[in-house]
Length: 537
Image (cartoon, rainbow, N blue to C red):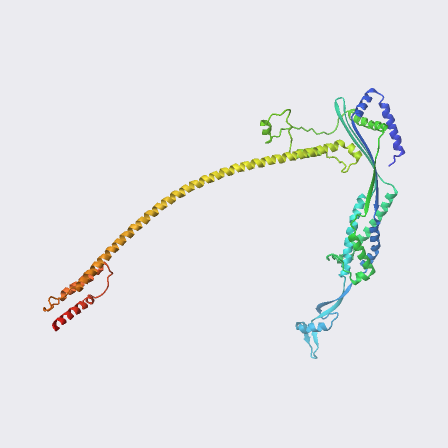
């Protein structure tokens, strides 16, 4: 942007005035000190231009009037609607009405003497226009998508369409004057609206977009769209019905719909022409005049006596941590120990110190001007990485310590558990021995009892055998004397013997409830036989 003649005249007066000021020795020393410092300069002239893709604007402008005609007179289908209404309000009836009345006799009011049926209610029919067709739903969907398509581009163009020309001057100084450190940083930015042919063309595009938006906004709020307020949008792919295919207006809307569905660009592109000035020695000398003016505006004027201020008091304190032990008891080092803060607050503080609006993709001139800032930002990032590495190392050390501690605790727990198992094994062994001893005593006692029972049983068996032997000997002994002498039966003795026999088995055999006489008949019979033989002889 060219400077006006007024600004040039003022600048020449300013330069001549500064030259006259530098005639004295003091002013020259201050000026020389500022010039000897670390100075950086940069001047940027930026000219913006933009271009619009008018194809989408032409497409939408061409369909606006067809869309308006469709909304004004939409196509509709006629449908027959049935309604059960009183006979007085019935508009149109047909054979279906008669069938309905025949199947619903409760609606018959009366039948006159001539057989005429007079109903109270009857099924009547009427014709209504149905606007909720697929084609009209497609138009409603098209209007919604068109509104969204235009609104996105209109918002962007509204905020960024206006073009500006910029002139930016950066001055930065770091020097030492009278044992004092001086830092001066100045940014002068002049931004003006571009008044070129491209700018006028952009204004025309913006006006066309505004007009399109005004039409589509009217369609969006029309009574036609209120009918489809609760209707869903039709889904892709759009069905080409006979109306959409053959009707010129509907087909035109279909083509524009497909176009905006496939158009993903913004439709506006911007171009910025940036030029960086090369300063001559005379230009640098004149730019240093502004450094002198900035310095004198601070040092050459007393502080304001009136004004509000804030008094802040800072009391720094020492941060202690576990790492202090390593510094105290660690090995001796040559030189001072470098303490490092690893907390997040300190890192954020360092980032704020260098958090300036630096260009993301700087060119050569910007790299040269912001060299210190980029280096400081790089140092902060490197420091943050080192701190992160230190924190990770500490975490690894803590994990290793925890691992060793867990191992020691596990070994102790294992030793305790092993000792407990040994004690438990001793107790269990003692209980087992005691139990085996008791079992042995029980077995021995059982064996002794069994042996005594066997001996008792054997004694009983021997007694029984003796009794049986005695009985056998009694049976084999003759009853009477010599053969020539008659035998004399002594019944009382036999009974006594029978009683003796009945008593003897009680020791060995269980008692049998038999009459005593049962044991005697055989003996009596044998004696009778002997007597009979003797008589026969």
